[in-house]
Image 1 (cartoon, rainbow, N blue to C red):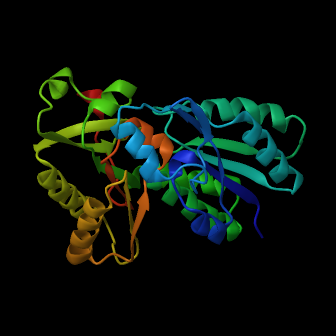
Image 2: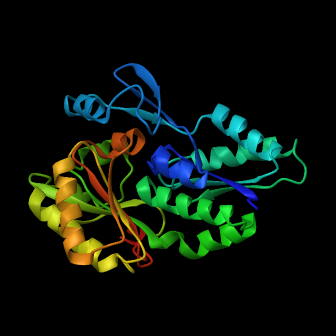
Length: 297
């Protein structure tokens, strides 16, 4: 019997059909672009991904906000009233303050529901790596795992869920301040394409740069093939910021090299997209534990 309701948030980018499959829910963040406010709804009901990224290409900048307090209150209360404990698998605390805010609200709500428990868990990840983590844990919750058992799994495995990415330009990351890199890295961006990984501390770490877009795509494939373990048992999720052709190129190469259980393509959501910009591609999968740290550089 299910004992825990699992939540993630808008940075997980996991679509409704997969959330519904395991009873996973999410807390919505918010964003503003060209003077209009939006909920960061993963089904893009008010604006299409193409329209969003075209605005950015024309120079518009999206400003993002953390999870909505109203969402936390409404969804946590409902779960408690239905007899569930709550596990919120949140975007990395190095990228968003949502997990810390949710902890405050959860403690306030819990005071009214004695006997219930809630954990707001720092995934140290974002994008579909966070979504895959939440999907797997929600599936375990459906099998009757307790909150403590789910947290133990996360403690042992969260650094195996990983994001490797390349962007068209480091400018968006530099403006947002959500990338770890030396000042020398930013010195000459002409024609340079960075390779970025979610490091062990939850940072976006620009750890390598290559010359040219095609080279960056091929480098991404190489890193995936090096780090992706047990492809027959796991899939890979490739998300893109309005550059589906390039994402498909990577998908085809990975299928050819590894033949994973599945390869899923999706649009990069509005929260992460605001940080990394159009032309970004991320590869998300379960693989070797991440040990690299941008803080050490």
